[in-house]
Length: 404
Ligand code: C5P
Image (cartoon, rainbow, N blue to C red; front, side, top):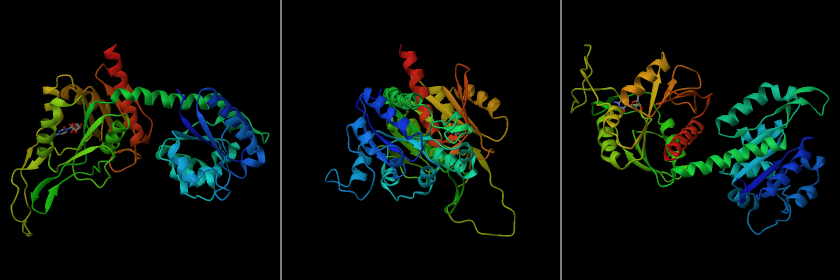
């Protein structure tokens, strides 16, 4: 799994630094190229020479030493790596990553990498449980940094508890899992995927509309995850402030009816459709051509139902795989199962939008995947992008099973 991969190993100042020598050795045995970056404190525990010998590559310790290559090293290194692993990761490097402090080679390069970052924390258990450390880990998780461990057991300081760095093999296993999943995601290469996102706007007059609190974050994350996995992604989006993920084609719409038209037009050629948009269920019967004048009278708006796009796709589907989302405020599971059957979805993702850390506008979500075969998978709170990646994997897995 790791053969041909370039891994940046960041070593910070903890006694577990000696175990990282073994990580380098195991990574290299599997055919990975390893570049080690050490903080100054790390060099007090293990010498750069040890890592240089084990990795057969230069070891980076300072931003200002004589360059080893002609280019700006922290940037060129950041661009080369397939993944970064910080092991051991001290409370200090976690705090620096959270705040973006970049006062040495390692913290600087970590701001420049665009590929996944894994951290294996190692510290005294009281430091690990300190609210500052716990908050930092929570923020890093939300940013999609993968935290490995820590493990439990005896600590160098003589106490016992959690805070020990995970064993080198356990750390390698996490990296292997990651690369094997991204291999599975190649299932998506060449697949056509249509994603809808954002909240539709139903005009009342030229300046007013009926809308909802959807920001498009979940749908944009879904589009990004499928694009990362090699799919050809079309994003039919209601107005949203979010940057379009690279490689994704956007079709901008505003109303539910426009979304209906654009989705239905493209449906026959799609392999997978993910309906993450919050589509308005009703629209005003009349769209005034002039701005409605203010008066002291109460106003009645007559609303008519919008077409249900997902239901229509469910009726028309041939081979297409359909995923719906259901934002609920009560009985999410019962409502979810009912919707999945009625709309003929293959996966329905439910979330209780009243929970903190879930729902509209947040970077994280708490969801349950409901599958057409009756299975259910509850996911803990995680970033919307990570949920989207889990969805890619579930679909890749289901599709590869039906192919066998
Ligand atoms: O019935 P409810 O709106 O909760 O269902 C949510 C799912 O149905 C979402 O996937 C949403 O995008 C889709 N939907 C739709 N057309 C509508 C309303 C909802 O496709 N008019």
